Amino acid sequence: MGLFPSNLRSPPKYLLGCILCSANGLLFGMDTGTIGPVTDMADFKATFGGSENSTIHGLIVSCILIPAALSSFFAGYVADRLGRPKGIAIGVFIFGIGAAIEAGAVALSMFIIGRIVEGLGEGLFLGNLVVLICEISPTRTRGAMTTGPQLATTLGLVLGYFVSYGTSSVQSSLSWRLPFVVLASLSMIMCCLSLFLLPESPQWLGLHGQYALAEKAWENLGVRPEEREKVQANVQVTELHSDSGEEVKENTTKKLLEIFSKDVRGRTLLAVFLMGMQQMSGIDGVLYYAPQLFQQAGLASSEASFLASGVSAIVIFAVTIPGLIYADKWGRRTSIIYGGIGMAILMFLMGGLYAGEAVHKTTGAGRWVVIVCIFLFAALYSVSWGISVKVYSAEIQPQRTRASATTLSHSSNWVTNFLVALTTPVLLAKSSYGAYFLWGGCCVVTVIVSVIYMHETKGRTFVQIEEAFKGRKLSEDAECTENTSRT
Image (cartoon, rainbow, N blue to C red; front, side, top):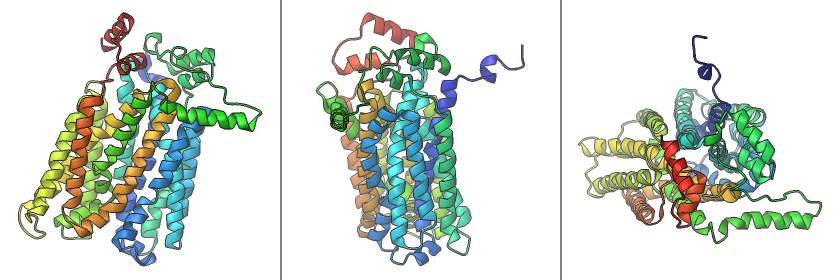
């Protein structure tokens, strides 16, 4: 017998597939962590005159998001037609092209075009990460596995902030170009790895009626029979190949509209709402504009706020780790409700301090309370909404609509993200407290809707989740399965 158990020497392929799939989240995190510090650099402002205007600043940051929303709407269909790994790889490749255009931009318009292209790729791949992981993971570890992209995103935030901090001392345009060079290079590497090494989903094979290959795929992934999601009971075979262009168009339209069929309409709308309100909590206002928020709270220099932004990224990454470990112990519904309450309190506290003029930039405890609240908000979001909302949105859908509905909900996420990114600098310029009250109010609304409409999905198979949303009690077989998985 070797020094290590055989299962440690050769981990199951589903675990390796989940790790590789999750690693693509680094790209999204790096872009989010880079764009705020980069647009605050003196050389960036010198290269693109006018970027100091709050409206233009918001446009530069947010122009990635509407293209992402549009491409995300079709990302599920692309993944259903070509396969999950190919859909992800195509999106990552387009994302890398956009980052390369940004790195080489010689005019503000060219930089914005790069962000638009980047957004098109981001929308194609990001939503499908959770879908693929959800479909290749054992039921008992699905929650933990599907938090992987969020963990990678938070690690990307850390890398983005500190790569930008490291290049900020360069006395040329390379100070802001180098982070995008790194991002473009990493994108091309991840594209190749995803295309050639990511496993295909057994659920996708079942969707195309290839049940024998689906069972073989489960074997290759190393998932035990009792932990596999049944493909035949949960899929609807759809012929996606046709010699007739009209038939292909008809099938495409039918596929896209199926997410609004009577039996799944409510779940689709719930997922769209939750993913939209995830951004209306203000998280990307914090992540994109952290340097400005810390300067507003009174940190003396741009360098100090830059470092504080990096610390917040480290905090986010650190708290996501226990969130991943305990994802299948903490309920999705519980995390969203209690996380939302905590985030609302923090936002109202910060808004109240600014409204009461208790935050002074040079003296007093008010500014430090705001800075600590920003850290706490980012940490609480990452351990609750950052994990649970995306997992929940994918889990509640039946197989035939999972990819399309999940990516549609990501479209909602991108649209609201755009609104937050575009309006945050304007709100901060007009009022020191308005943004905080707006974000806190959105958290409260989300909590109310979650209390009324959410069903818990923790530890349940897709069949059990389906029964819960259809208002049926769990069957004896389902209950036995659930008890076994918990054991």
